[in-house]
Image (cartoon, rainbow, N blue to C red; front, side, top):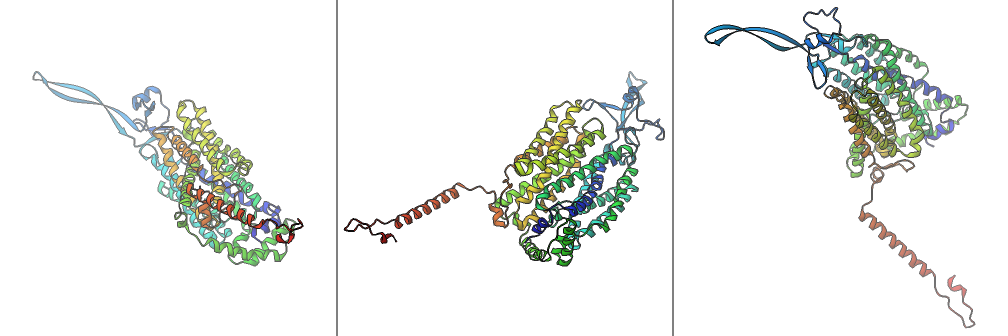
Length: 588
């Protein structure tokens, strides 16, 4: 009897599972605070150079059009003033010796562009950000993108480090270790004295979001992390789709709440403390959250696992015999030994597996890059930053709800590929919209975000079903590593908006469109027997060549001919006797 069979017997989503599920989904809200809070911590403030006659203490951002034109060069391409340089009109006097031997003095005016030493910022929306505190504008603007990118590097490193630690020491202690580091790191971010230490502490916080969130949802970011963590390990197979999507909706809740915090707290240091403090509440989980029963079984702690499962079934109102749970140990050992028979290199030794792996790697990179890129691109869409950010979060609710009702009906491939294509087309259409038509640009961006959110949710399940059992964990880990790479690249793509505002949307749209078309080359997995061995994985979805089809047809014809000959041999003519009666014994 398998582990899932015991879960079915005790109740797929009983009272005990619902309690643990709710408790473990709540930390996903905090993870969203840190992952998306960087948008407001380092928000862009309109700026201009501090003029020589101004004092930084009392200078205001807004100037009269006359003063603005006199002090700053006008850029006809962007239709804006070049506020990174000061126009310095200097008067020079020089002698002219070419006027019939008479020396005369000529006066000339020259315009010199001087680089800014100090800046004046528009603080009407954001009182203080890392941009204003460390002057991350003009020739330092790329540092903002670097900070967000290194945060995602932390997410990638954290998924590897905490995933391995959770397999070795258990889900529960690593969850609390990640939580404590997140609290300490979050406070250090708020008190960082300069930008380098701020980026380093943010990288540490980014790594802890993996450690905290991974215990709540199946992420599969390293070879070991596709083992179902605390929440889904206690949920029945038929409820895992809804449970997984529900956990993502908690993340979306944190996404939307981040804008609420930022709206009322406009100082970045205070905002960082505000999104960190709620993590203290989850320390009380130490007395409520048990260890994963599946992990206990894989580590040979059978008695503890039995006690936990019996306690859960009792809370669900179902008595489960002790001898029924005894069957879990052998099944766990067999599953563990099976998973150790293959490695990442097996994905590239065979042509069909190699082709599918490359397509999945690309799709993970595109989905993650486009998802986070659009989430952080709210300020480049025009209009109000807060409204754009909230709407970009709200569209995730119908996106995930859509998956619940369609993923098991329409199929995985059509959802993944179709949503990516819709996202790509919507984002590319922004090129045809005038820049002053903010409503149309925001609408298309929202459609693109909704569609890419659905595809990002579908790709987890689709990928797990593509790889054979013996290499599934390895494949999921490799795919998720490519997803983190997409998140690392996304901030730099958004930075290209300084060159051309729609540039990031065009890049994300093109990538999503290509990824959607590429995903159509993958085989459908809905209602299919999933591959278990490497050979099964190589044959799964592989199209038969013309020669193979002809060979199969030839074999079928030969089998049919042999069967017909056997039938003819079994039918012999009856021998007639003299009295006209046939001898029935001839044919037995």
